[in-house]
Image (cartoon, rainbow, N blue to C red; front, side, top):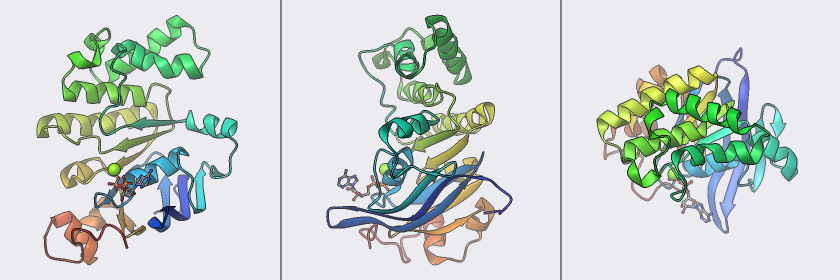
Length: 259
Ligand SMILES: Nc1ncnc2c1ncn2[C@@H]1O[C@H](COP(=O)(O)OP(=O)(O)O)[C@@H](O)[C@H]1O
Ligand SMILES: [Mg+2]
């Protein structure tokens, strides 16, 4: 990454084990402010785990996780919650609360975490719904929406607090190609509209190249490449090249997600 770019998130020699199972074995990664960084890697490799470490939901076994220069790994809950309010998360399967309307799903974080009035909350909800083209869904229940619509509402909820950092976990998983393109475009426009940095986990190469300003590849517990999309495309690293081309022959095999 360019030295002139400001770093908003940094992972420093992060190790993470679940019991005897070491998932991350010394991850180093710097996320430049206002970038859209796509994290690539095999399923089961630890990508979602990395996002949970950045959110502070998980603590590393060792190493540092820095948000705006502050190591969040040892932070007290109160301070960590303040940091978390600047982060938005978009989950793989929207994760909307099925008993609440769209409006109430989006209102919830604002009601719980801010002192905004009802009128201010309604305004924020309407603004975010407009940004994802879902104004008419305001009073619907999640069950009344298609998968693509739910995904859009998930995006709106991810940005409801105007986060400085948005984390997306497999945002186009399970969507048809057209809806997937719409979501990709929204990821770009939303990041720009609120001036946020985005970290996007995906294994879909087409989406990855559309969205990314930077790319990083997680392999066997480490970030083995972190570069521009152009350099990824022309990479001679056998792991990166195989992942991008989807070849079945190469260093990546099923079952080698972990060292
Ligand atoms: N809370 C947990 N307890 C034990 N193992 C876990 C937990 N969360 C994830 N894992 C394991 O860690 C590995 C990486 O998971 P994950 O980060 O979800 O991978 P990815 O998102 O790259 O597909 C998997 O083998 C998974 O089973
Ligand atoms: Mg995952």
